[in-house]
Amino acid sequence: MQESNLPLLANYTPYFDSPVYVSNESFSQSLGSNGAEFLAETGRMDGWELYINYEGDPGLEIAPLRLYSNVSLFKTIEGAQLAITKYSDRHATEYGFTEEFHPPAKIGDVTRVFYKRVQETPGGNQYSLEYIIDFSYRNVFQTVQESGLDRNVDPIFLMDIAQRLLAKLQASPLINP
Image (tube, rainbow, N blue to C red):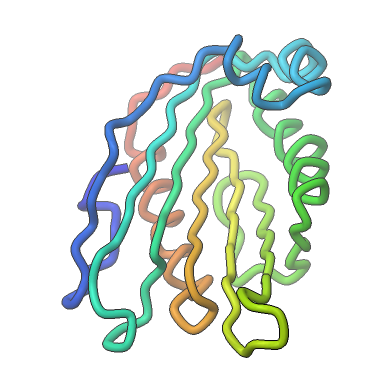
C-alpha cells in the first residue's frame, strides 16, 4: 500500500511504518495451532504487511486512527480463496469480529467484511470500531483493516482503499498460477 492508495484527507497525515516481509514460518506461528494446517491446505508462498498511523484532529473529518494492510501470494487461486472462506472466517470469529453479511460491494473474486465494536470505558459512551475487508484476486489474498473511534471509522473509506488496491492488482502483469 502506498499513499496514492489512500483517499485524500485534508486534516490528517499518514505515517507509514516500513513494510515487513512475513515468511511462512512467522505467519504459521502467528496462527498458533492452525498455522501448519493453513500452510499445507492453502499453499501460501509469501506475504508482506504494513501499518499506517494517522495523526490529525478527529473532530474535523472522518478517518481511522490506524490502517493495516497484509498481502499474501498463494500457489493457486483456490488456495487464496480458501484462506478467506475457511481461515478468515475462523480467525475473525476467534477475535470477536462479526461478519457483515451485506458488504457494501464485492471486491475481487471472494470478499468478506468483518467488524468489531468495543466499549472503551465501562459505562461510558465512547466506543472503538474495527473493520476488516479480506478479498482475493486470482492467487493473491489481501486484507485491509481500519481501527479507531466509532465516529471516525467508516467502512466506505476502507472499501475505497480496497478497490484501489484491487485496481493495482488487476493492472499488474500477474502470471497464471
